[in-house]
Length: 433
Image (cartoon, rainbow, N blue to C red; front, side):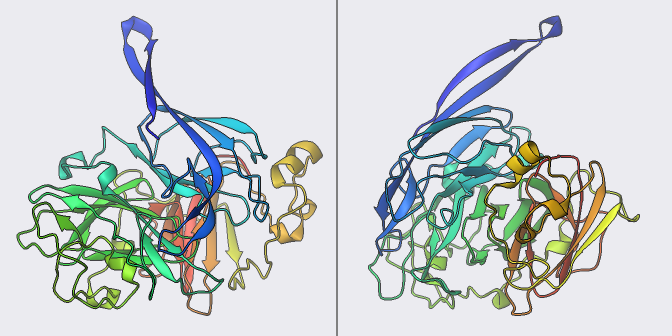
């Protein structure tokens, strides 16, 4: 839907005025049959369609999002909830009810369900907050809804390898119908800022554009010093802003305005077909596996501002070692949702100690305004598990591709944990469960 915008003028001392915009969205959450890769499934959708509505706003706008629960499929959950990265919100939304979310936006983010399996049942979407004071503003010409790229997976059965990958909500599976590829139109000589968002439930992607270099300027809403690569990894829940510079040769996994309207690419990609789904022009041999391109080494990323990790190189107030972390467990404990959620237990029952919560919740209680160093050990089976810390940006002081760095480490809110150990630091300055 198209958002409606109204303006409120706030009078300040000495007749100084600030214009604050109210941006309004209405989300009808419903069940629908969709076929993004040609295979029909019953899913949970926003406003009757898929991909889900792109939320757009300017930094410091006031977002009003009305959620109407119209779920009817008895084979699926009929309540729902929406999580907005880094923003407080209300609790579950019961059947046939509605709620108004009121946000003072300040950073790029995504939204998705936080109830049961609704995230992978398609209740998820992109949200882009444009910053007119972006420190990288001079580096690009175009940053609009055409440059928002979502990556996700489609899986018919529960398995590690998805049946298809989707770019901007469309893709193909082997042997399936010829679903039209997603298209991104670009104009020669223009500089584009792409916001690449992984909204998959499990799969990670290596994003590249054939015969083009990309300059990474932001990860998870945090501005970093520009670094130019040929591709980068993006795991579930992560997003990166990258710049596409103008090129002399018209070879790309894109569609140049004025290029021939040919069919699918002639090359033989080594990965999922959907990794070429933004192609509408004839190309030479396409090599998409990361071994053939110069991919981003995230330890080389350094933030533009507030570069030092919380507490610097000094000892943390508390070091937490998530020992014996195996796939789908933390400290050998597999999460099971409690009968009563954590927040009501804190409010109604005055729970303050980890021992008061269910062991399957694996609860850690932290003091306020402390520097926490968290050691996360990866899986022994080679999987990469995205680790997200709600309500906090953390410093990745020890990643999987570089030495320890407390002076100017990458900052983000989702980190991919591979087979080794990842160490993050954060300050407990945002109290909440």
